[in-house]
Length: 312
Image 1 (cartoon, helix red, strand yellow):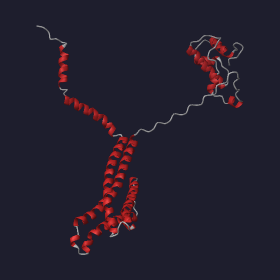
Image 2: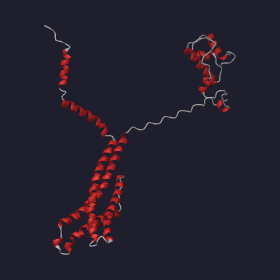
Image 3: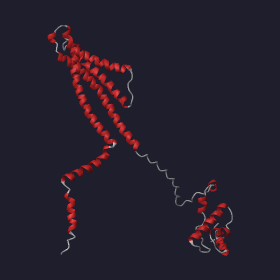
């Protein structure tokens, strides 16, 4: 009986693993990967600000368009009320066209400023702020409605049109409402953007402290000139590191010691120099254990002149 073919087993396992990888599964996997990448971008405050600006711009464009249409209708009604039976030859006929745009312009200017202060959490709590807006609305509504109800006053019931009277009463209210909503949208839009940036700043890590500036390098001596001599005050304030640097690091004459022992002897000699006392064999024996005669030789190598110059 022949044994099963072992190399074919991984191929069968691989076929089983790929059996469930359908087109729908791959598509859902791609969507999940895309969602994972978008999750971090959606929380970005800059992206939130861009999306809010785009959405707010579309909304404001639509509101301004319909506000302009409403102003055209109310302006015609106000002009008819003020001009009366005058003709185009009368300046009053032309001046009547400017009254309603003036009222609407004043209302829009007030509401735009109100949007700015509302975005900073401040409300216009002055009495005349609301009174002026109500006067502008009432004036526009009255000048649009009065010509429509005049047939009722003169008992000319056949000339009265209820639909026209209702439209002339409703459209000024709609125009006023749109003018009120536009600043509110601008204020809320600004508040959302500021809140997103404040939340991002609250979770951001603190800024790293700047590194201290590097000490200035001493000027290099010019070739051919002698280095300046240190003053007495500078010589009197020499630091321990400067005095230690003057100690010879290697002895040209004397017993040869291993590097650790030589380093220990140099440190003992440096302490004796800093304390202003004589370097003795006791200092040598305090750091390394050697014979007395060898300790004397080590002391002599530090204190006796070498090549005509003293080492100490």
